[in-house]
Length: 413
Image 1 (tube, rainbow, N blue to C red):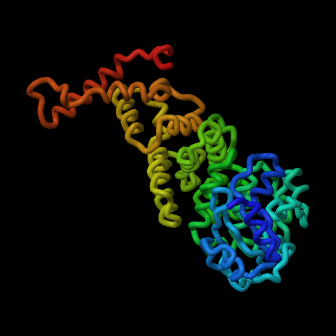
Image 2 (cartoon, rainbow, N blue to C red):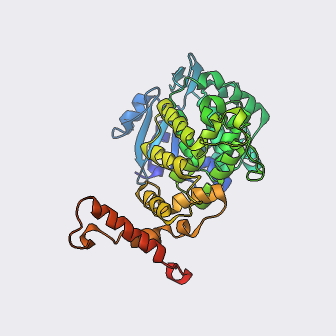
């Protein structure tokens, strides 16, 4: 149905209809707004379902319906107010009957920029808590002390700071810090969801820096918090400790690629430095092996996506040696390893370039070498070559190809 028909039907029953959330925020920001979320006030659930019998109920703690509006399935929720009764995001008593007002619904939201509502059909903006001014000023501000009642709001504020380039104001940092105890017990899926979204922002480091400032990094991502204060040779790392280096790398990867897989690999490439014995610093010998152990423990704690684990493990194991090889045999082995990994060549290059600031030709044009080498197969073996010798012959031919290829810029383009 058309939006105007949806709104008209509700208004005829005495309800008020609003667009809420990110769509309104993005309209004010002047960027392309995506899916609309609707909120209905002044109506009982039974009346709504009678009016829209095809609506699909998806909410559990409170009713949210999917309704086909303007060719898309849009979320429609009822105005609600909440009272904290327990811990975590499930610890709320929710009231969503027809008596709940717009003002009560907006007050229970997290930040001012998310508390805006556009009433339909007039398209009147209701800004009760200064959201528009904070959007224009680039400020993330909690509406009230109730911000801390859902601990994942602290992660969301940090992620939105990275997403929009906004600054979190001081009192909101204090409310984020108050989420520390409950965050420890939050479902890891919620934390992982915010991590994924943070890695998809223009500057992911802001997310982790905000959590660090709020005192939350050690309870959400202790593997990264362990990098803080881990010294490095100043000649190679003028940016500072291992945490600063990691933040630099993840942002540089983000500048080169939209791939969340590559960004995660950049984020974890130096995890092993967090377990370097103090007496070894500023050097971190063997941090590749230790990094694999740390990543494995992270996975046990949070169950990371399988492709993240594969990419992260590969980069941890190979990032130090990858751009520093000299012998043809080792270079060929590495090139074929990269080709077999779940990272594309641009993704792998993005991480290594961010870490080392330059690339040797064999990585810059790695797929060209591999394409030539993969043309060799056992079918090409000389007569009489069998068994293990087939593999040995293929490898010798691949080495010849690598040694003999002269890459000219005009042949690469």
